[in-house]
Length: 383
Ligand SMILES: Cc1cc2nc3c(=O)[nH]c(=O)nc-3n(C[C@H](O)[C@H](O)[C@H](O)COP(=O)(O)OP(=O)(O)OC[C@H]3O[C@@H](n4cnc5c(N)ncnc54)[C@H](O)[C@@H]3O)c2cc1C
Image (tube, rainbow, N blue to C red):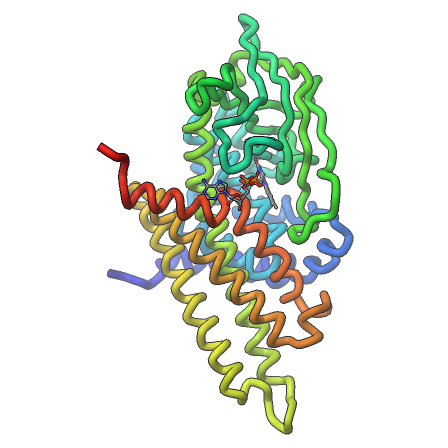
């Protein structure tokens, strides 16, 4: 067993860390406060070969392995989950999904645009009445001969306001549940594709775009089908399986970001005539946090490594997402407490980490749903 990163993985980690620390961290607080995504970072990610990292080189990606991709998501998550979330949707849920399921024509048309950041991608699965139970979706795809008519509503779609390309999931027959679902590549300037910001102010990921998309008789050609008719649920789940790796790595980043901040603060803050880090109770907090960060990181790298070997990863990825997001939730809560009143203000980043982490426990399958997936794999189907 070799725990060492390869020289190439170390190079990608160093590049991602430099970019995150020097270009993302300085704008994260302002982006969170203003609720505006720092779009100038997208061409920079592309220039650095990080925007569509795991995509094959012939489609404009860097062909990085999944361990490198996890390192990248970790470094971004360590400073800003809105930027990390943007990347995992754009790269994992959209670009890699097209690479896996698209026809050669679809790949040639869309992947280079996505890799260069000229087009942004979004993934539209969730509906008001179909969240964890995605197979109960009601958005309809009506076969009209040479085209489909899409009608329905999707909510909470990350990147949904600026995306030029959406993977939209719709059903030909709601009663068939997962067997009736199709995936479509929808260019967002198609008439009948209407989008608005989600109402209300989000708890976290405030710099991310979250859209409500209505499909009002949106006409798409047959060539927009991604995968075969009825294969849409498989397309959706395979994308989430990859996406969850990026979320797990992002959670490792948040937990590490909390630990980094706590170490600095525990060294400098003095009460009762000593550093607060000299109180044994806070030392236990730091030690527990460090142990959880390590465990979450190892589970995440294992899931990434399994993907690189082409081995089954569903259970390992769900375990990584479940453990890493729960560990980061605890780390963020402890980090706010350790910072006292300063942790309660956005003067310090732990306040934002505390708000952002809740989103990671919810999207791409809640913690409950990860447990369902893991338990189903453990128990198997009843004979
Ligand atoms: C910040 C953010 C970004 C998002 N981005 C996207 C996006 O880009 N694209 C997209 O399509 N969606 C996106 N979503 C939506 C997200 O994927 C869903 O919110 C999520 O899948 C949960 O669905 P729900 O909110 O409808 O909860 P529900 O499914 O209604 O669940 C409610 C509660 O019941 C629990 N529950 C449900 N079923 C079970 C079960 N079988 N066993 C035990 N407990 C269960 C859940 O865990 C949860 O606690 C985003 C959400 C957020 C918060």
